[in-house]
Image (tube, rainbow, N blue to C red; front, side):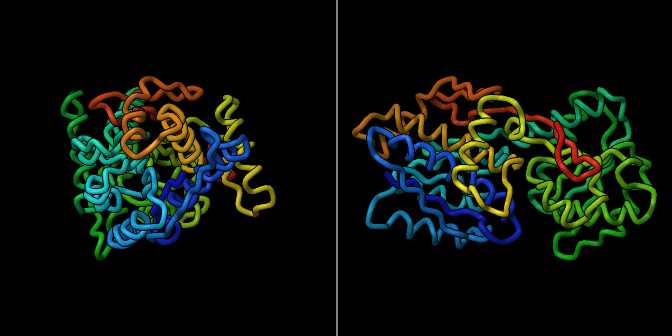
Length: 356
């Protein structure tokens, strides 16, 4: 039974795409080692799109036209690539399961073939801002790229502020075509913020942190820094090293290093898949997300029965209902294709590891 994926295994979102891929592989390999599903093994085929939407379309076209028709598209990286292949999924009558995108507009579209595991950026922003107001942070600045992505997330921040009668956060844009991080850092500090919410990429947030840290006025320890789930802690550390200490990131799955049964299953499957790998993904939330998503997809495959095809698998996914995977609860049904709204905040410690 073939499951296919186009993902960012290289390029600017490789930390996300590669980790998700590794986690999913571990889950599929564990299932195959136990005899597969309905006595059949799962073949998981991945292609690298480098986080390029055109390449994702090209890959998907080739994957769909292979010698064996895949049962599902799975685990695509990011909003642009996911949106680009939606028409292909619809035309082929094939399910697109667990794309790694929290985009509110994308998730609100009526797409019968698309099923999300993670929730929206609105969930994350609500979690972050609720936490900040709870601890008494009233002066909040927002760092965002001045493009569709950043403007959309800024609108969510402003909507929360308006709904809860808070002061409108100071918005500091960054031009994606010619980013000026010294100017952005200066503009942020002029607002005398208590906290900064990062709606940018890992690379942009990392470079801003370096500027703030070098100024001696706005690095971690002096300002609170919070980021949405599209920010990778590993990327932040590569960009800013120790300046990342104290940065808080919204996470979409339970702690992969935790004591829950699903976390233990994940680590054992990962170790079996990569017993001697020099790359350790056991603390990666994106790898955990790939593992959970693959487990959920296989549950739908099991429920679809031995005569599984694209249509029965899609219907089985919609019929999953309430699924509890450790502390992670997901619910699907007719017209409800977004499984979870789970958000947890995690902080980068002084030794640059993550704690929740």
